[in-house]
Image (cartoon, rainbow, N blue to C red; front, side, top):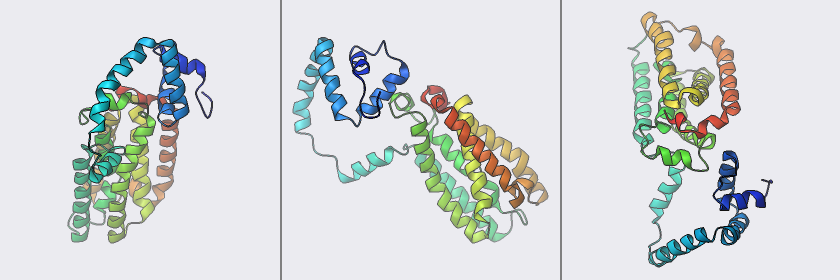
Length: 272
């Protein structure tokens, strides 16, 4: 496909059923057709010429739908807003994000009460794993009843993963920002681990599934960092400012792996 329009070879092959096209060509064409009226018209012409049976079927379906569409009321404004929101998150994400926000507020209360872990900030301790919970919920095969349909659309894959991840961070990061400001924790001290854990979850998710990666990383963090920190009431290296370059390196490596393996998120295995 060129930068502007699909080639006639791909369009004609798609009109014949796409059996002679590579999978990435089919996905690229379907994504391109969403926003290109010229190529949709060319595809319609190709179907009429090369697949008359398909054209007849489409005409039959359209003749049955057209009278119903003519009398269908327009979508209410509230529903339109909900449809736009669904491009970024699924309904199953809402309770999970609410839980994450609730946990953050509880951690903030514990910090303010100064009854939890001495000099260790609970907000700082939970910041790396909080967005991971939301990311796991947003890309979980078990929590999304429409996961097969979602994974099969042209805009699935890394594009959709990044959208849902951005929606999670858009909710969690402001709450953590407030919590960090109230408790006096430096922004980079919680933001870098937060982003590094999220990128690592996506990187591992392309191999073992996003949900499994999130659970594994959360378990490792709880066992290696959270439990010893709470037991000793001392801030470990992972939570100190001297550890920020390490978190920056982990973040860069995670982003690099996600980009290098971007094709792995188009398969259903990423929903595990």
